[in-house]
Image (cartoon, rainbow, N blue to C red; front, top):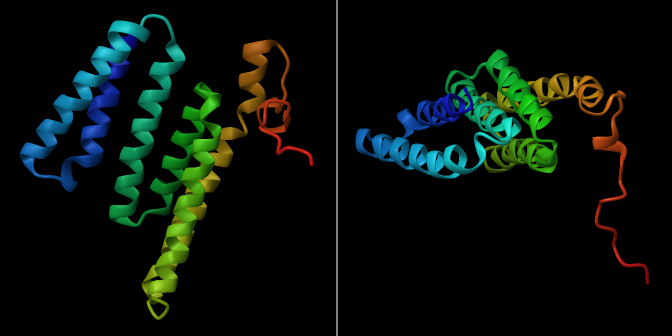
Length: 172
């Protein structure tokens, strides 16, 4: 099952990129991603860590749905992509900073487009799609206490509130 999840992840990455590249490029991408995932995850990690494979498939689903959301300019798909990202983070909590960075990059892209094209009214929905993406992510992250309860036996938000491991600036 875990090896199948890696295959699904490779397929979802191909689905996300297939319209953005040529037929040969898409085939090359599928072979490269599939080969890399097979060599790294199936031969080394796949049978040890379920969370790695869940993260891969959920992150790939997020990317595939996000590409479709941008192509169709869909709020529902944007929120769904955010929810997939939130679920991916729940499977590998160490990637939380990357997820938050992705949301910030989306917001920065909207601001940059508005600075470059201030008269373009059609760019306004971009901010709404980023907000829908962030809302989907936040909604999925609301499951964090349940994940913590399943993992350690007590519901909490330590992933977000525990700051002991954060890098502290030197006092001086």
